Amino acid sequence: MSLGTILLIVVVLMLLGAVPTWPHSKTWGYAPVSGLGVLLVVVVLLMMLGRL
Image 1 (cartoon, helix red, strand yellow):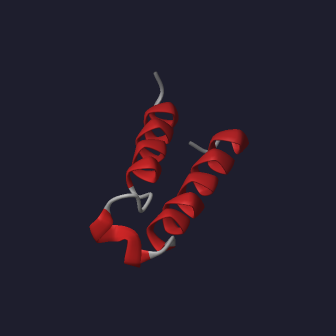
Image 2 (tube, rainbow, N blue to C red):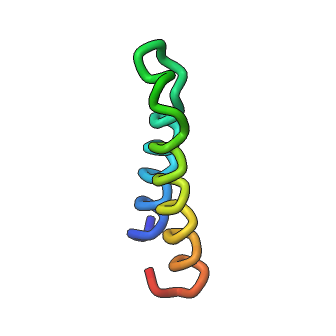
């Protein structure tokens, strides 16, 4: 497995973990998810361009 694939898997797992489903995190909104979503898009674009 390449570094890009491992990084993509880690970012996807972080994105799933940031979804506000627990009672204490419902007031957070979607800010953690949107920040990790942007990171996921950047990683995917870098993988597609062959830079990662």
